Amino acid sequence: MATLGKRNTLTVLKDAPPGLYLDGGELGEILLPGESIPADARPGDELDVFIYRDSEDRLVATTRIPLAVVGDFVALKVTSVHPSIGAFLHWGLNKDLLLPIREQTRRVHPNDTVVVFVSIDDVSQRIVASARLERHISADHANYADGADVDMLIAVETTLGYKVIVDNSYIGLLFRSELGTPLKIGDKCRGFVRTVRPDGKIDLGLDPEGYQRVAPLADRILETVRTSGRLALSDKSTPEEIRATFQTSKKAFKQALGTLYRQRLIDMDPDGISLRDPVRKGR
Image (cartoon, rainbow, N blue to C red; front, side, top):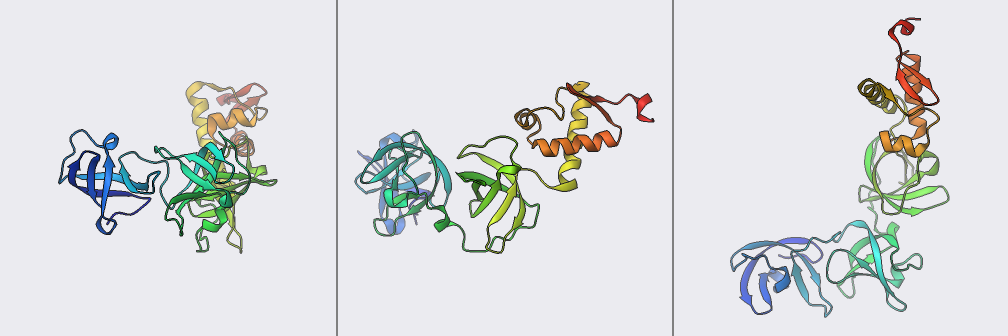
């Protein structure tokens, strides 16, 4: 049976002037219009398609891959805005995705990037977007160990930092103090759980804490210095320069440098880092 808002593998039933008709099971025959038909497709073939509704609310199929399916949190760009209906979002298909006014948390404008949840409207049975993210997070209590690594989607900027979607299921907070460089709404990155609060909200960081963070980073820095002979970074470098090279915060970088320096493996000056001379190492 075909599922609206998802990718499906459906069998071609027949060829007709409008396109191919696919077996949608309980949903009936579903048209795959001509522009989406693979060149060698014929009755009896199975095709991987996405099912949605066209501008006349008819079920149709496409071989295009949308940027999100029902059940996904995703960052999408606003293509246009209707004052009484809502905003329309580009999601990779011919028909834009509607973000109704009632599902907006703020007024959006063309070219804005907004993080939304994709679902099926209970009344109209249309695929729609919602920016009211907390309505759609998992009802299960987040069960992460401190230090667990997770996927993050940067969703909303707050005074404390950023609200993020964690593993397409939960809401978390990435504190501004954890950042070495500003992030943008819609950015995707790896993060690490600091703690799960009693209310289920998750505090996050961009780097693992403690020795788990410092030891691997120190090894990477040391290997880079050994390979190149000298690293043109120091504890005076900007957070942006450090993250561009090692994908870590300045705080973590300085802690790793301190570890290497205490082990007498490196020398530091304002312009960079070099291996310590073996003669000096023993002193």
